[in-house]
Length: 196
Image (cartoon, rainbow, N blue to C red):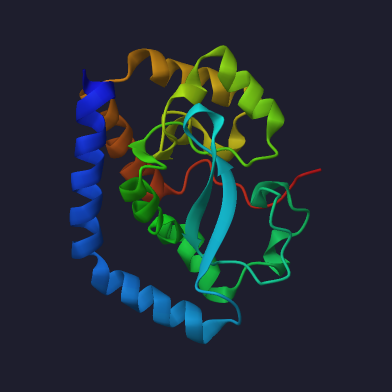
């Protein structure tokens, strides 16, 4: 009942309210992105959504325009060369993710769910199939996100996504959101650049 009907309604209402209440912050970020680096305001990237359908995920642009677009930042050998000065702050604060409220309103995403895989992360997509995690809308945050994020292996991420899929509930979503707030302030599990 919650997953099929209530979750989508709650996601839609919270996202609409957040978009209105945070419109002043959106405006400030838009101006700072515009005047601190060349390029578009937003960065759109092809991601995998509900039932493995592709969609375009929106973020505030934090990278320079010549950055490889289909490689996760933590796999870049020297990500610092690509991140803009203001982009560094946006990533550090996770404010670059705010435009995904639009993805939630459009129905591409949920507030809580497995983080959307890049279209070419075939190993993660395949592992999630094992746990039926591709049958959920991807989330702005998720259970794997608050239990290791970039430090997790593909199999660990998929297992945690499966744990969420199996135990999805309103209280579980609240738990994920509360843990996300803690992660944002502590900056746990964030890794910029490949150690290879």
